[in-house]
Length: 145
Image 1 (cartoon, helix red, strand yellow):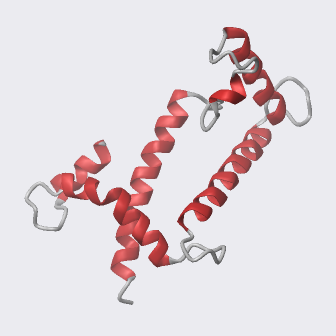
Image 2 (cartoon, helix red, strand yellow):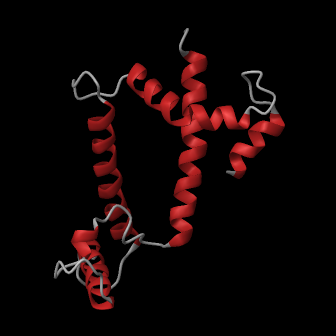
Image 3 (tube, rainbow, N blue to C red):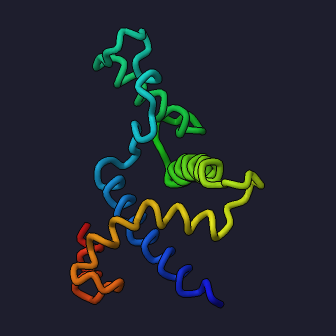
């Protein structure tokens, strides 16, 4: 029970920040074909430049991978599967990075430590009156960011 308030605060911040990130990503591109892509994956000829052809070829490859029935179009099911695979990969990477005791699981203290490090400064910048709490006005600025 002593962690209840911390858990609620942590997940509220993650939800708000995460949903903002997801909305931004979804607005920028339906497929977000280059999100998380390494430069070298697109720069096929390794000339340290990405040509229009390389960019188009990479997009076609990403589309082809998602188009599992190879009909030249993406159904909602294919999009869901492609996104699920991407999210699953990210979740595994997050656990690998934050799992300090290497037990393959993300425990509350590990998550809380990461959230505190990452979002502590955000909270401080929003807490305009430095009282250690966010009032409605301060909280609304979080949603704007």
